Length: 103
Image (tube, rainbow, N blue to C red; front, side, top):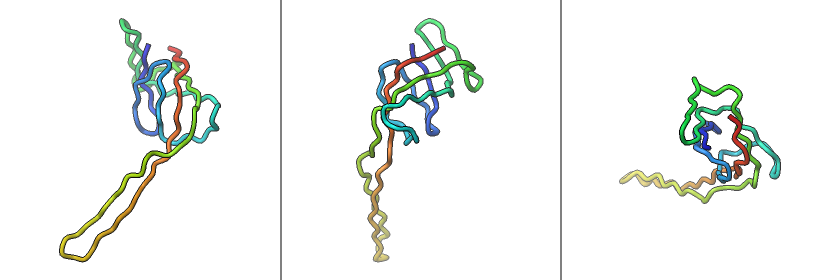
């Protein structure tokens, strides 16, 4: 069984046992999170699609850890203007493991 959920403005296709890195959630490591914005649930032969969400469908996940992605280096350069600006960015994430899909 798989489902499509929304978290942090992005859509993810998940199955039980998947480990995802989502946008940072304000929960502690080791706790559980319930995603109630489920767009679609399918089990191979039957598929349910919401308009826009499915009522009564919940995807449960456990929080594994919090962390930060690798640094992305940004370079802004304007030729012939004596201008060069170097920046970096590290995005925070929450790693979760999908434990249950209730359709």
